[in-house]
Length: 318
Image (cartoon, rainbow, N blue to C red; front, side):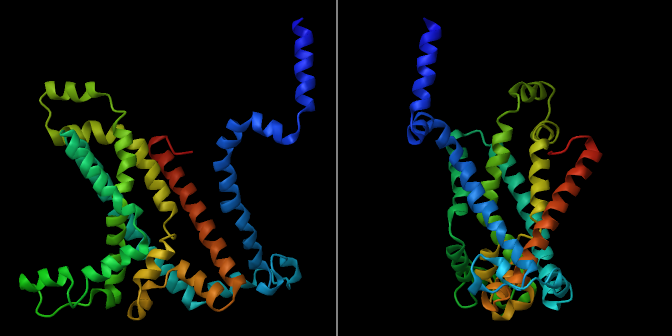
């Protein structure tokens, strides 16, 4: 009887149409949507990399083979372009400052929030600290310009009242300050959001470790150094390696809305370089070559850092 019912069930399944089968597996379909979105928005656009090897013209659409083959000519022109080397220097400078400030500050913020014992205050600080992450860079840039304005900016007002400066400083017009401003803006906007990852890791620490430390008379800083930080070290390593992998990806939108005509020399990053060549000058081949270069560098940095971490303590992120 069971064999007959099984055969009937199989026959009915075969008779189902495509959309009926999809409906029966709707839970699996819903779970696969994020993967599908990653494929569509992250991997399908990689077709644009092929533009680097052709003298691509937008009038040919996606039919890249309708253009003349130029091989590695775009890369040769890239590495002999002074504009490219200036963009590389600016990207490295901003990227290093971002890693140092954002990485260290987000870790310190997470440790400080974790040490707060009053629950409502802890949740309030945590919420307030990560809210700037959801603010558009356009809005964030306006806040930066207003805050650092030489006319009515609060920073200049404080400096003048304290007698530190005699005249207002045009912070946003000084090329030598642009890297630092971008890095500090990144800290304000994203450090709180990054701290959530560390806080999540801290919740898995065994409370009995702190209780034993209290019995032994360990102080707060001693517990942080000997229990908290070692316990979340795998998370620290993962985020550090990923941050180094994004060294050249300093963020087009952030730089573009903060830069001005007077800071062009230090604000032209590789991402601005790609935008200018592809969108402004129509040199799609050169822009695609630049995109390939930054992606290769990111992969090399991640793999290299992972190998270094493995050699140091025997464990990496992959």
